[in-house]
Image 1 (cartoon, one colour):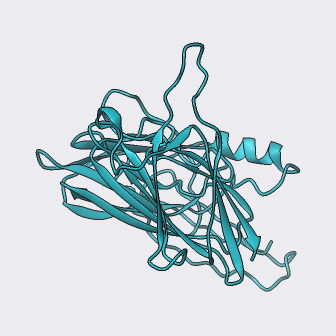
Image 2 (cartoon, rainbow, N blue to C red):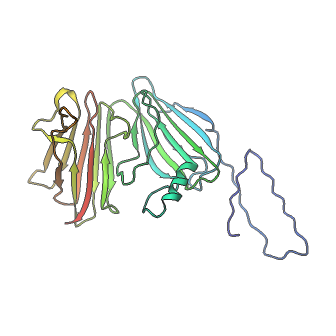
Image 3 (cartoon, one colour):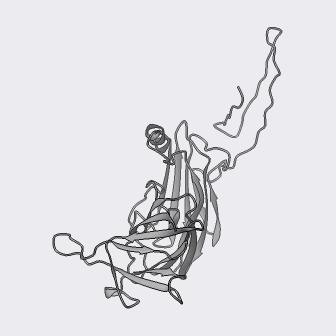
Length: 295
């Protein structure tokens, strides 16, 4: 045996070692540490910013956990939550390990409730979703829950949060190991939040270009969309002399459920693009594919 991890069910553990003349070997070496599980089963956080981690992160995900954390913001504020790492052993890299990945998903369940009455959801369920891991609460409360069974995989999660009034967030998306990916709106699979400016900077390896294909969108010459809905801004700073901007609105849906738009394709001049989700009284739906090609 090279390594064995034992986790006690309570705050006490007993180790007993016994040998006699019939046993020969090098013996054993062990280390121990106390794991903070004070956030289980329930805890409430009221700090304006902080860090959330699964118990025992970043070593391994412990079994038989049921931990729920509620973050409360001051009146009039919302909560921005962003994951720095999320490893539950179910990352889908190919189709050969589907059974193992489904088993890993059943052994560890993580849910987020953004308030607003839309119910909880499980993040990181869509393979190839490039912009998963950032969420904004719909009100002054956000709740996360981690529940594990007998044999969870992975090392757990680490996230940071802060309370915000005006939401102007920016995020870098590294496309170094990406050839094809999906870009969806903030808070997916829940509705996009209102009153948000969320800028994402996509960077591909040098010598490559980014092809952005947007679905159910129409070009507009103004910087606003009808009815106070949100707008998508795509910026290429290197196209043309002073850069090029595209302003996109959600396409109207005709009777029968047909959309008035077709696919819009935008190719970067060099290896970078900026995409801003700018919502008004209501959020803006975003559904796009990102592809990286040698330039």
